[in-house]
Image (cartoon, rainbow, N blue to C red; front, side, top):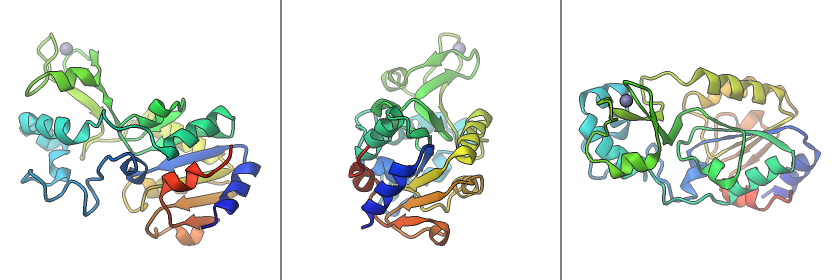
Length: 238
Ligand code: ZN
């Protein structure tokens, strides 16, 4: 493992951006529903991709929220070595932004300030009718379909399948990536939209890929580490 090479890159970098996928959260015990050992083959007849679609949410809100409370809200999870090190790198002025596809809020829990959440966050919720915002406790403590005082459905501020990504989050992420001298990508196979497209905005010197399995971008990277992202980042000195 060439952690020493990554250390050298981190030492010489002034503007690091981290782009993370589901693999960052799985090390905190959060299941990845896209992986074979993820949420498949469990007690739901409908595949997660269907349950997490806009159509399903509209047609079957009861089932949607049952699944959401059961599988998507993981407030028991704690930040791991990857989250903590990225927050430390930001405090040291080395890292300028985290771009994540995860919806668990663990980067903020670890202390990161600049976080672009491409798929939103289960910790934020809002009324579809009046726009009032609610925390995750409101969803956990309510039963069936959570309702606002005004009668509207309170939904999680996450991007469901068939829904567009938040434009502000995309713009922030793209700007940060385009300014970075080092882009570290971790815990994603880079096969799922929109991850792959973001790499094309990177004009910096060092592209680092940390993923247990090979990715289609390995050949373009300055450094490839087929390791767990938490273990690799955890061993970096700030
Ligand atoms: Zn309302």
